[in-house]
Image (cartoon, rainbow, N blue to C red; front, side, top):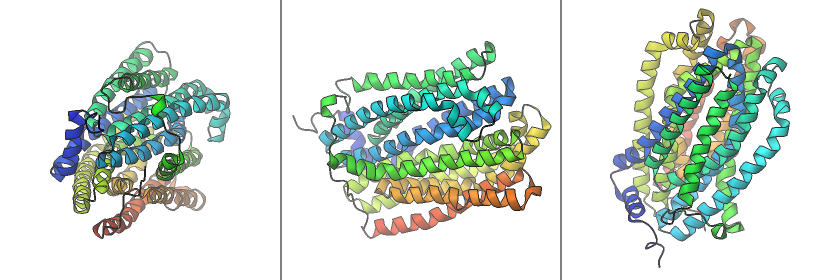
Amino acid sequence: MSDAAAVSEKDRKRREFILNGKPMAVVLSISLPLILLGAFSYLSSVIDTIVVAKNDNGALSSVVMISQIKSLFTALGAGFATGGSIIVSRLIGRGDYANAKQVANTIVTMFFVFAVVVIAALEPAAEGILHLAGLTDEMAKSGLNYFRIQIISIGVSMFNSNFLGLEKARGATLNILFVNIMTMSLKLVFTVVFVAVMKMGTTMVAASTLFADLSVTTYAVINLSRKKYLFRFSLKNSRFTRDFIFPLCSLSIPVFLGKFVFSMGKVIVNSLAIGYGEDAPGALGVSNQISGSVTNITSNTEDAESSIESYNLSVGQYKRMLQIFFCTLALDLTIASIGFVILTVFSEGISMYFADGNPAKAELIEKIFSYERIGIIALGVNSAVNGLIYGIGYTKLSMVCNLSRLFVFRIPVMLVMVNCFPQIGAEALGIAMLISNVGIGLMSVGIGTFCLIRIKNHKARDNVKI
């Protein structure tokens, strides 16, 4: 039986649509489920923040800082999910389903092992990691059990993100949306019951996240065991050879390093923010979340765009790749602009709500967010460019973007503000966010122009040889 015959009619039609459907229709079809997913993910994080703030406001900064620490480690899974998705998308675009299955099986095996190793390595070092990240003794003590549960979630999330990356690679974004709606519904129920109703403490917020993550793992295991599933798992079908591992690492490691270092930078920024008082990291985290109501949504177009671009690159449809980029850019700018207007109009009320009616905390949040919100549109541009970068495999450029955003535009500004302009106070956090976000937006314009010229001149190549 040929590769094509072994593939479901649904998967074949999806490939045909991605390669030949109207560009905007393809972008919307693949992106909208992920955009809705971003909205639900944001809602989930907001619920966590609200529950913590209303049940133990003193733990808010600890929870925010621990969330940033978690992002450090989940960056590994996210990086390889991107690299794996690029490779699988190109293989499916070529119609090479046999190799696509092997790559998928290898990624699943790798990240099951990685998940176990990460959990085993981090659990004994949990308390030391919190101190190293800049948490005070009191904050580390109150957040230790929360962090221990989050460590298990880190391992589970690494596996889940790679499975979901494979789903994105085959264009099954609607499946991802449905499973995540189920997951977040479970998380909401667990959080409300354990914390808001039973008053079991903020540690159960982390437990609720873990239970929800495990539901995604269950879904993944069920699918990977199905006979008609495109990536049905077989350990014998895994392939740990140089011709696979090298291109996977070449694409994934720059993404991982960029995300890891950027997340590490957020931990550094939070440790600097403590200099403005223990409420400052929490206020910065809330400001990030308010801004994230828009930027988390636009960033979800990156994966959709990268898969579509990868499909089309694999068959040399360069003109169509340009069309896909501009359709994605138009979508991101529309979302960013509408979001900016809404958040500007309602910013004071939103800040007061997150501060649980405390005027001093609301004022602190509003001061920071009044600067941060200006960068929302710039980050919309960055999302469209990132999707293009990933799609053509220039992942080293994404690493340069993330490193620049942190070490060129954010931390230096923070250090100047803290040391040279202490009288500005916590507003310095917002100024640092503004400069870094606008700076990366302008840098993205330059990088995007370079990539578009490469594509127009047919210099971008499908150089993944598997």
